[in-house]
Each structure stands twice: as C-alpha cells, then as structure tokens.
Amino acid sequence: MNKKLAAALSGGAVLVLALSGCGGDDNEKLDAWAKQVCDAVQPQAKKITTANAAIQKETSDNSTPEDVQKADAQAFQDMSDAYKAIGAAVQKAGAPDVENGEKKQQNAVKELNSISSSYASLKKQVDALDTKDQAKFADGLKNIATELDKLSKSGSDALKELEEGDVGTAMAKQASCKSASASASATKS
Figure (cartoon, rainbow, N blue to C red):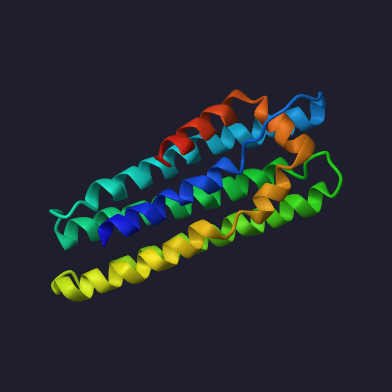
C-alpha cells in the first residue's frame, strides 16, 4: 500500500521537469527571463526531490504509522512551499518576451499556486489520520495516494505551454535549469 503512495509521489517531480526545455536561438531578454526563473526554480526542485525521497524512505513496511505520518506531512508541506515559491518566481520574472507571454505566465502561476494548495490540503489530510488504528490509517493513506496520483497526472499543461518554443529554448541554455531537470528526473527511477 505504501509503495503506491511512493509511486504516486514520484510523479510530482515530473512537474518540475516542465520548467526545463531544449534548443538554440538567441534572445537576450528571453535569456535573462529564463535565467531568473531557472535560478529560482533550482533550489525548489531540490526541495521537491528531497521531499519525494523522504516519503519513499518512510513508506517501507516497517515504519510506524506515526513515522509515516510525520514524514508525509513534512514532505507535503515542503512540496507546497516549493510550488508556491516557483509560482512566485514565475510571477516576479514577469511575462516572457514571446507571443501571449503574459497569458502563459499567468496561467503557469495559477497552476503552480493550485498545485501548492493541493499539497497543503494533502498535508492536512495526513495530519488528520488516526495513527492508533492501523487499518484506518492504511485506508486513509490509500485515499491520499489516490489524490496524489491524480495530482501528479494533472496540472502541468500551463507549465508546458509556458515553456514551449523560444521560452523552452532559452531555459535549456540555463545551467540552473539543466541541474533542476537532472535532479528531478533522478527521482523518477
């Protein structure tokens, strides 16, 4: 059961990957924008990766419900904070210098804030689980894993849209986006 939770969690790291692209053109304004966003995303990507690892570590069958609850609650809080910080970074960077840049930026910020709220909600649910009753606790975790699975499958459309074309190209050139992408993909194994 806990393995399902761990598997669902690793999907969260995929969203961070949406913030790194690939390619070649030159646009100084866009490069500066990409650098600002990538530099801000990198520490948050690490935070998400660390949170995923903490949950996977505590989902082994010999962990007590209290340990699992504590680890999961902290990880969900960290993920919520990280996505909120990424949203703030994209907001602060302003609209990228591309067609419909403002709309793409606002959609991505909205999406990142929504993901942040979803993780905050999962933290509340984990905090509310009854650790004294193993069966109830397992059922509660199962429900959380289902919601987490939905969360990891949805919610990256606006991010994908934001990093299409020239924006993705500019982000791909940033060292900090490359390392954010590498650390996020390492958690997918």
